[in-house]
Image (cartoon, rainbow, N blue to C red; front, top):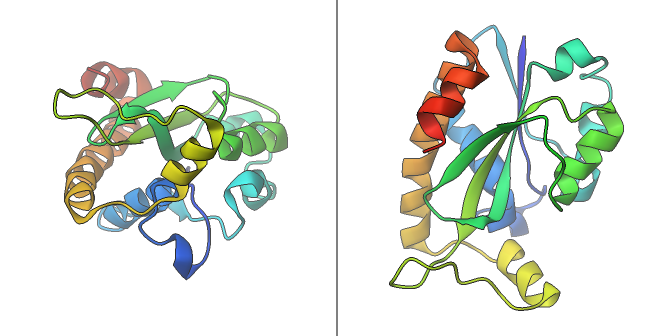
Length: 175
């Protein structure tokens, strides 16, 4: 059984916010959902995401079949990266999961949420408050269109992870 978790915050006020990118990606996965896959949208706030997995991911064997999809402001909108056995990298939702399941040995799909300049450079805020505003801000309609395209590629990546393994998917999609 594969466990696919889309991180975000519960509640209407967080719909289409950058921090809910993981949940947005889950919507695309509904089309391919099969008996070997469980989709999970935690009903906890981001910083408590691990609590939602406490009773599900009970050992390292299950953790190896865990795919966590989340936002990453270090990538532009339209990009994503698959990683495995990495630290939380400052993402508090991932940090909560690592602390709860007591391992970093799971797959992460980090989806870019950062707007860019016309030349393609990231428009990162200079301070922590600005980053919080960015993360909790809503996507513009044009950004949601781009996110929908990314969702299709993320779905393909997850299908490849399940069918052919994470290494093959990382080689194919981490370009």
